Length: 303
Ligand code: AMP
Ligand code: MG
Image 1 (cartoon, helix red, strand yellow):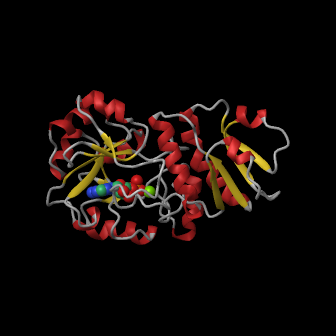
Image 2 (cartoon, helix red, strand yellow):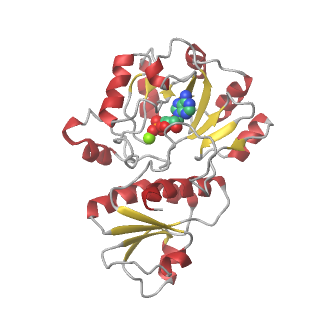
Image 3 (cartoon, helix red, strand yellow):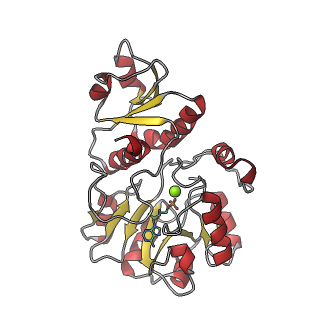
């Protein structure tokens, strides 16, 4: 994601992020660091965290750790834990290496809008209030980091992403639980602040279908709707589509679907369709679950 960055140790700087995003003060922001060593200045970095950071940093894994006093309350929304990661992007890393403080950097979108995967989307969403953008082209992965809570009895995944529970279990040699029931956003399972149902919503009314077949059986299409298929292959197998259609990937490669999902939602919003239609993946892979999770949130208002 593109992020809105500010000195994560400076409450006034962090407040500017909250103000610009319209982010509720109850939703903590993640700190970004360049080296593993830096982390122990901001959080209690135990053996588990060390192992995970050694294997997955720089990369899309956010660790929730017990914070040190130097981290201000506004950054962690008053919680005793702080989310930290080291990002795998050269431009961001070069910038972090020049600084003597961590950067708080939530996704660069107004709260509850779709996260941006290109600089263009950022400037469109913020308009005249857009801060300067460090442009490094489209993002590589397309969805937000996996968030792993290391302060609970058993390590638990609070947000699904590219780093899977199986990879984390192998690294730690411990079972890891997933606290998001990605198949049921109404579940009462505990979740972290900010992981509310509606979180990545396009402005266009978006409808989620259980499968491509369920989508084809839907009766409420208008001619100005857009179906966003997971693959071109499945789209081309169908005849007499009821409306316009596009696809997130050619052959259903999950990495490509993850990379293109938010961009497609941004594009669809601009094109002013009546309704968007998304179809869940039927794979049980962590990345498929992460994609389904984002699709559910994009459509959550309407389910
Ligand atoms: P974003 O920066 O937009 O990727 O969102 C960061 C998300 O990380 C928040 O919405 C929370 O869900 C989660 N998070 C960050 N810090 C904490 C924390 N200390 N405890 C629980 N969840 C956190
Ligand atoms: Mg965000």
